[in-house]
Length: 230
Image 1: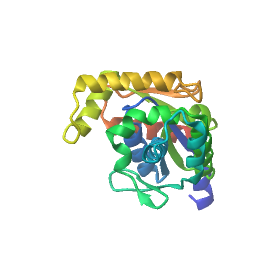
Image 2 (image 1 turned 180 degrees about the vertical axis):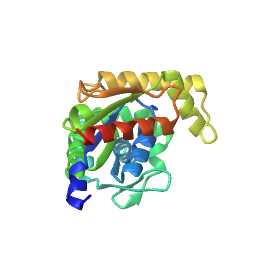
Image 3 (image 1 turned 90 degrees about the vertical axis):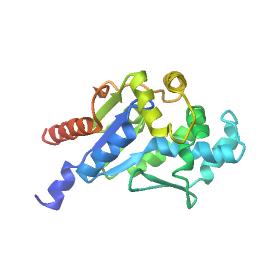
Image 4 (image 1 turned 120 degrees about the vertical axis):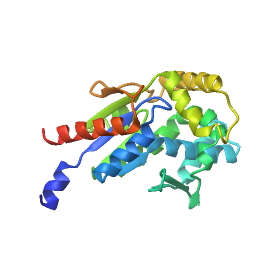
C-alpha cells in the first residue's frame, strides 16, 4: 500500500463516556495499535483546573478563568504509561490526577470560555486525521464528523471499583464514597448547559462492564477496520 493510500485510510475516532469508563486507557491503546495520535481531552480540562486552583480562581469567576485559559499553553506528549501533560513548559502529569482536581474538574469544564478555547485546540489537533480522542463531548461537539464514534460506559459500581483499585494505595477513600462521587460527577456532566455528556446519535454504545481492557480495544480496532473498508 502506498503512503497516499495509507493516508486515505486514516480516520478520526471519538470515544466518549462517563468518568471511570476506561476511556483514556482504551483510547491510548487503540491509538498505539493503529499508530494514531492519542489526545486525552480530559487531561486538558484537568490542567486548566489545576492552574485555576493554583491561582485561586473559582469555577464561577468566568472573566478571570477566560483570561487564565488564554495564557495557558497545554502540550500533550506520549508517555510510558499515560499521556504526559505540560502547561507552559511544566510537567503536571501527576498533579492533574490529584483528588482536589478530580473533585472540581467538572465545575471548571462546564464553563463556556474553557470549553470554547480547548475545543478549538482539539479540533486543530485532529485536522490532519489519524487521531483517537476521548472525552465527554467529542462525538457531539468537538469532532461531530468523526468517522467512528464510540460511547464507552460501564456501571457506576464497576467504574468506582476500577478507580478504587487505582488509587487505594495513595489516597484514603472508601469504595462507597467513590461510588457516590462518580454518580455526582455523572449528574454534573449530563446536566451542564454547555456541551453536556450525551451519546451522539451515530455513536456505537459499548458497555465495558465485565470486559477486559484488551477486549474493548480489540472491538474498537475491529470497528475501525470495518469503517475503513466502507
